[in-house]
Image (cartoon, rainbow, N blue to C red):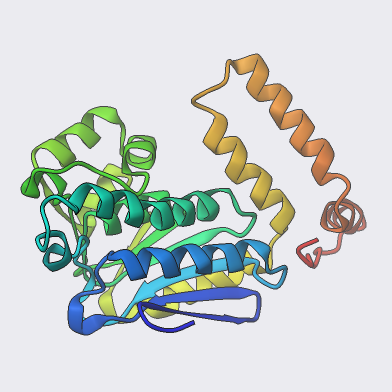
Length: 261
């Protein structure tokens, strides 16, 4: 895979990198299409037990491609619908796939880059990273699951403030608000992100997938329904090799080694 992104799969990790640093890694139509294909590959490839998303260049992403958006006013609504097909399918698959997703933000993340950071299971940020809402600054509103995942990470009231007041947060502010999982020194980000992805890739992947989907349903279900979903998910996981390995190895006072199945 080449163009807007690259995807390399090795050692259980699907490593996805935004590779248009000269353009600021914009979320244009080509990017959204390639992101969807990469998400599908990570979802379907049994070798992928964790996903790491990072970017090249001075920006994580500048968000929307304004040059494309300003070419034809009449065509803009169609462009938005076309682009969000790929972007939204990618976000949905990353959210629901078994493999945990880690986003490593090294610099400024704008608009859709913030939504992607919120959608990820883990977001690591360099100390010099920043998160800019951007949408209302150009008279638009959030996409990329921003209205789903920002409230889940930072709360509805703070989401409204961030988006409507078009705020920019430092990495430390994003950590304090709950958008970011961890802040590390700039030069330590790559090492920290790979360490976390490697740790997750060695875990019980089937269980991780069930946890991810349970956390997505928790706002929609009554307590009793959510607990039944938990019970049914636990029963499904009990069919996995990793569950049997975990139970028997810990019972024997040994550390289990999970295979992701």
